[in-house]
Image (cartoon, rainbow, N blue to C red):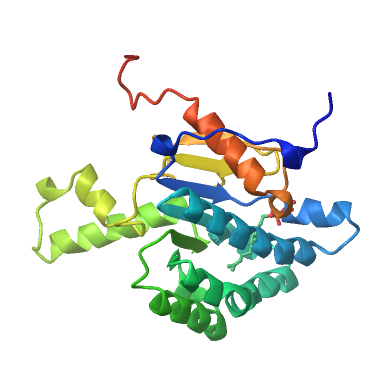
Length: 248
Ligand code: FPP
């Protein structure tokens, strides 16, 4: 029997909601192309999905959600597309900041915001400072972000601490390294969701995803919705996480 997707619901275990979900929001361009629209229209619609999924994740009690909005490699794209993506934070916060504040969402970013145009920087920094006291979902934008770059940056910082005599090489361990990543005090990533049927990490949160569960969906990001989020969380809840140990 055919079901209308909207009528499908997934029973979720409230005691096993992932604390931190990371999203590779893929497929904006393909979604737009299918509709004979420019790629930028896909990015525009993709921002609506960020709002929708952040509000639902917050409602479910997810503590943190990180979205891959612009990678260090995305500069290879056509300049007009890059410029368009840099304008999206203004559009996003103009439309949704008030609502996100009302829902107690805290905003952050990881990445090289200093490489963004001043207007983009200002709008993101303002949204971050306006929500810094909020205690609900932490919504982090990975913006001009690369996982390898993050690890190199952290390594350089710790080398400098050694050279300055603040620490010795023996003080460096996984905990210390992790505390100096851009994600410093975010909870561990439990679930990584990539949309649009691609099965790779594309340089996203390489350290943080070491023990995350991965769920890949064919749905393009602009079409990803609450039901699909529930389905991905239900898959996550069906997994046995062992963190290198053995089955109990
Ligand atoms: C991947 O789809 C998407 C991106 C590289 C950009 C995603 C950005 C947003 C959704 C908006 C960011 C918003 C804010 C507020 C910062 P793709 O273009 O690679 O799609 P394709 O694989 O189908 O070509």
